[in-house]
Length: 253
Image (tube, rainbow, N blue to C red):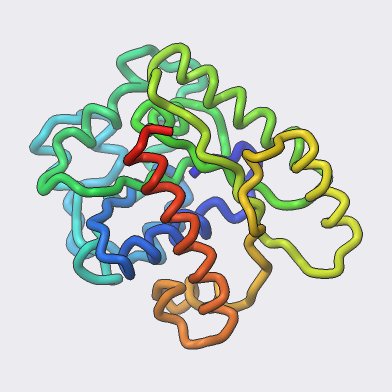
């Protein structure tokens, strides 16, 4: 998940997709590249012996094996936990070998997962570039605000840059518009602006602003497990987004 603007719900979308994958029975590993480690806090990794900081510093098989661990969400969802120490590695101009560390590490994960989800930080340094180089598809996250267009444009440029430089299979899956509120004239205007400029890259429907999302995260459970109508509404949307992601990965389009 990618956003170069903080606070738009990038981690929420990552966790929503992880929830949909877990509910579907898709064996998944979530990599938390964000030094804030909010995904890690929510998933509660079980007995981690290393973090993403150690993996990026030394992406050998033994280090990866120590970092990959189970989560409190249950069997079928493992993770490489985030760490504040990862910020020390977030150089603004990393070399080619440095941006390929996560890609090398993922190849060592055993058993091999069906899906890897990467939660990137909201900055374009070594951490985010590792996430892009290790990916085939980039899901961009924004919200319908005055700064949305510039943020999406910068994120798309970052995807294009890494595709040309290091990862030729990388493509933008699309842009998830998060925290949409009904009957907001300002938001309707911003949504129309996004659709006019980025066309079919803007995924529909936009994810609504629902308190159930914060409630589920606060309780440390998946959105598919939270017992409310709002949670069920959002869970269906994450199921559809997961379908699109899996179809894209399978057919390479």
